[in-house]
Image (cartoon, rainbow, N blue to C red; front, top):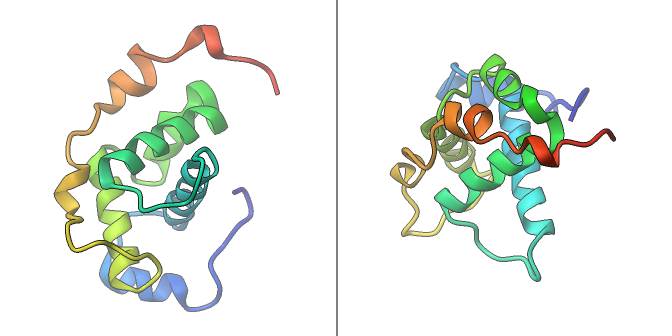
Length: 128
């Protein structure tokens, strides 16, 4: 994801809807979706809570113990923030939502301190 950027004008459109998050936060959501889909037997719709868990898993896989710091640097401090990013992407037509999808599906899926610090899988850490 390092060095990835949206095409010209995309972030301008996003900034009209939401200004809290860094461009990399939006790219992180898209990468997390792909990470989740790649680990499934076949592609399908991913529910909000399921995507939030995939974001956690992808961040831990990608940045290890620094995952929370990276996400917070981009403005992501809770699972509700993930939902805010997703629904901006939905509103702008970059992602599709099912009629049953709701931004509240992302609320309180897990606590960042618990997920990224207290329950950090120290035994699973490995050098790449």
